[in-house]
Length: 473
Image 1 (tube, helix red, strand yellow):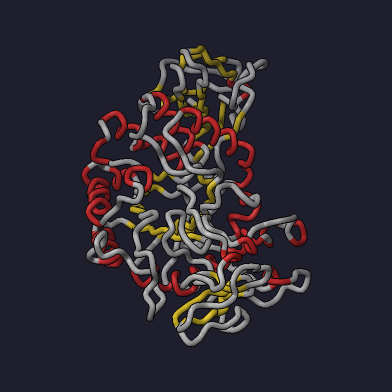
Image 2 (cartoon, one colour):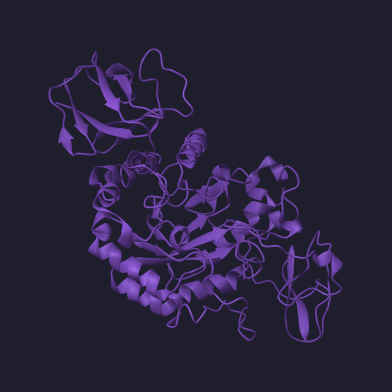
């Protein structure tokens, strides 16, 4: 989601616009197309005006969407929507990469994308584990190819096409992602993929795409969720089915896709997202503010049970390098995305990052917690001492990794504050000690050892996060 696109009501038009919706269950807009265009059914909920013979109602045509056999207890499109799970050949761990939107918006082109890919090499990001170079909205022309119906890359932005860019990115040992929308148009008004899922998935595959961000703008009224879904399961909601249709189409391609559901936290996506994709957005768009960082942490901690291998709550693209975030706030931004196992997609002009910011996003010990292949669950809030003050979001988190037990402490206060935790209160910590406390930011052990009866105290700067690993001596 980036910004709304104003559209005239189709119900007021005598004919549907070219490439516009012209039919489907619950559709109350125009059902005829201009002369020389036909209303072709893509699925029971969506028909589209495409070049062809004379206009017709939205009750004929062939579907381009994959489906499964009917489920007896369900009715309508929910009974035949794809149930194919996401690929297990990708997406086990949170994605690490870059997305162009926060840096460039619609002002994107091949040069900027390839510059980011080369920055991955020169700044050590690839060596740190970052691999995805992702294009967001505004990459294609406004109209599909009238003959093939494929989405067409804007040749003024991508003179070598998307496939040409993908080839160069792959040659660097990186992967490439692209953007589309589960509506009739993207958030910026470019062609969406609703009703064209199979064609678009095959097109992206032929270009060498490895990752799809799938947005949620310009959804026809008959595809919205007006009531509790069938069987009370949001997997059967219209919103979920729009994403299931693309998931089914991606599953038919010869190469695996990492699939991110950019659904803004709608339709209880945390309950069904892992049945459709690898990650799912938990809110609207990010912003380079402390308020956004704390709000999205607060949202995410309510749904930590959804997070594991192949299953990640997406807290949205990173804002490190953007706005007026302090270094301490940027450390918390990165640390929270790490310990809550969110995808980490950098969203700035990488060439403008300073050495401190680069050291934050390439911190090997924090990234190791994010990318741990043995433990897929995130850190979770815990009661660090017998009495904790009430704060806007939880400040104390603990989680396990293959290397030990970890404690992360956020100072939400506007001034420096003393923070303490009792070793006996840390979940997962076993034995009586002695324990070694290791600073994950600096990569060094703290002086001395601690027992299970010890309490550790530290002064934390305003809006900063400290990160520790506890191991037996």
